Length: 537
Image 1 (tube, rainbow, N blue to C red):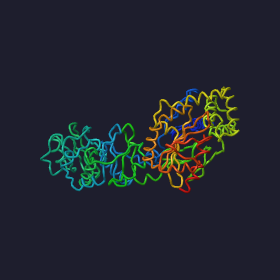
Image 2 (tube, rainbow, N blue to C red; image 1 turned 180 degrees about the vertical axis):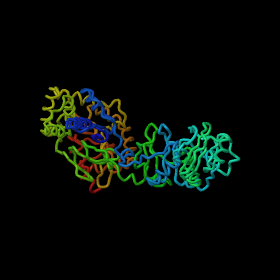
Image 3 (tube, rainbow, N blue to C red; image 1 turned 120 degrees about the vertical axis):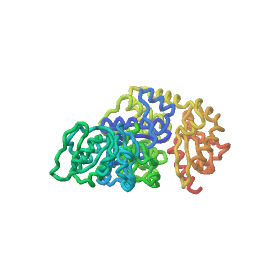
Image 4 (tube, helix red, strand yellow; image 1 turned 30 degrees about the vertical axis):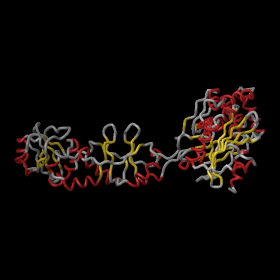
């Protein structure tokens, strides 16, 4: 069974990472296989927390788009290079295939065989081409003819001689295959000429076995001469019939959205799919793309598609655990939602542990405590509630961190140094995209004790924000540089619609910068005001 993937938003912060890890532990204790994931690189604060509690980084998840491996139906029929033409015809007629992939002993893809190629070969085939222009094995020949060896030792391996009919007895050479009737004279002459195998077409019951000889194998076929020659042509090996023309093939990990147009425009109807090691996984047709198994996911600390993983439309959302507003959240089927007006998602996750009567491990309790302190800025954020504070007190006892205030300050200090960060890293560390009155707006935030260190990079930040606006069609970018001690934020504003910020906060922007007294929460003190101000723009 595929595991449930649990992840927070893009540009992950401590709350999104810790809540995904904690919820994954809860699911595992409830008997649900779950994996915590991240959608981007971790910031320094989050790394500090994970190192503190000796927890590995969640795996990086780039997309949940449907892949070929998710398809509910993949055709598994293949042909081997050693198979006969009859095997191909039987499979194609039974399964209604117009083509099939051809594999070698290692199941590696060697080519494609098409029903049109088979038809063309039949139309132009001469019996003199058999075993010369088109090769096969003695095993295929016997299997297709369903013949009985009545005399001699039947050979094995590739047929090297040519096929000679009853009318060509005078041309039989050493090692040839002769197809004749039960005429004793024809059989004797073929043996004397050195024929390796004599195929006797005799559908009568009065067939008399000729004299025994070890030099020449005699095979009786229960069919007339015409039927026998027709069957012989079906013994040809697929390896000699493979079309050398180019064809499309895919890998098992390819995404459906990447291959749809290729399949639509291609002339072939069946498409081989290979595994990572090159072996053939199966074949697919366009109609197979309709039904696929959706990856099961749980969203934490976010609910908007623009902040979530790529390909979310292909996934099955089982649950959302969040403390943000819900915007444009549409699903195809009912979803379990755990949402509360609290300062941290981990406060909600802790409640889920308690509802189930399950105590989190010492390490997980430490992660959740850290996330709540981080998201509430040591309880200074207006988003902080009494429930957040009480939850930290509960978790401090489980985690063994009694002086959680000192630990929290150490964590915040460890995560707020920006000296080694580029302007781009500062901007995207916690960037969220919003759509306001049809305008795309980006609001980033960095919590720091080193305000001057960030402001010294203002020119580089402005240039980076201009490039980000251009690349993403943002009409406005806002970077909140939050001073943890002073409980306020500088807002660096770049874009066409700066007046939105001025209207929202009743300020005048000078040199792209403005101080917002008491503003520390993007969710509660910034986004609602920007949304209201954008309505008249």
